[in-house]
Image 1 (cartoon, rainbow, N blue to C red):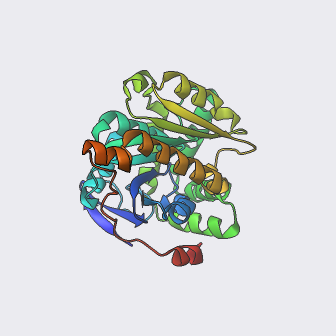
Image 2 (cartoon, rainbow, N blue to C red):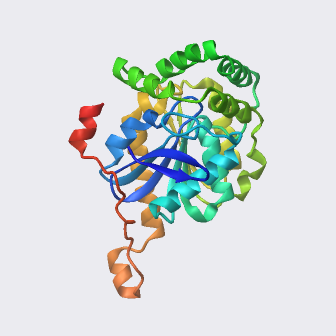
Amino acid sequence: MPSAAINGTVIHYQVHGKGTPIVFIHPPLLTSANFRYQQVQLAGEFSVITFDIRGHGKSNASKAPLTYALIVEDIKQLLDHLGIRKAYICGYSTGGSIALEALLTHPERFDGGILVSAMSEVSDIVLKSRIRIAAGLSGMKTMTKVLMRGITWGNADSGLTYRNLLQDAKRGNAANIHQFYKYSLRYNCTGRLSELRAPVLLVYGEKDGGFKRYREKLEKELPECEVHVLDGEKHQIPTKAAAEMNEIIRRWIRARKRLATPDRATAQATGEPEYAAQVPAPGTASRAEEQAEL
């Protein structure tokens, strides 16, 4: 599995497929393994970039306290390492807050954002309590294992997925996981959302009742967004509603490219360049190999 010296640490990453790049960001404790179905199902059209946040999975632990600014800088330097000038960025749950911070901090590096079951702040008592409990458990060595089992089981759509998620989660650094949870409690970029100029795709589950307020807040504050609410689905969309999520992403990015790029006839008539996919990314696995690993 590829790894790179990034921003003072070693980051584990994978690249699957060729085409328009999409970077995926996981929440605390989970790892890039949470995006296995995106790696498999989107690689035929996109360059799917997944990585373990420092202190998670196969990436090295972070000596510096974990903050969103630090993680965003890691993402920027990972894109530099891969020779990618611009990409789409997708964050799941708390990872969506990091995606927003990346869009706000480095708008020149991202064509758009995809937020899945995400939030720009943590402001309701229920979610605050859940994160505080998770932060507390992650600060106790014996209870971290209990937390890992609960979260990976909640995100698993099968026994095999559960085992894969848990195996990677166990590699994480408890101190960094604790820092991630604690930082998410105080992060708030809602007041800056009006500054965003990149388009944003919002994907939520109909039955994810606690996150309805966060979806509505983003809808209200974002200058340009498209919203999809998946019937009958809860919070864990990347694993439990992967096919629907991935098709929404395909259609949305295709539409963005049509809006942003002249077609062949227009390009020939005006002399403007047609859209060209970025340099094929390394580490691409075959579809058969990917399916065999699921």
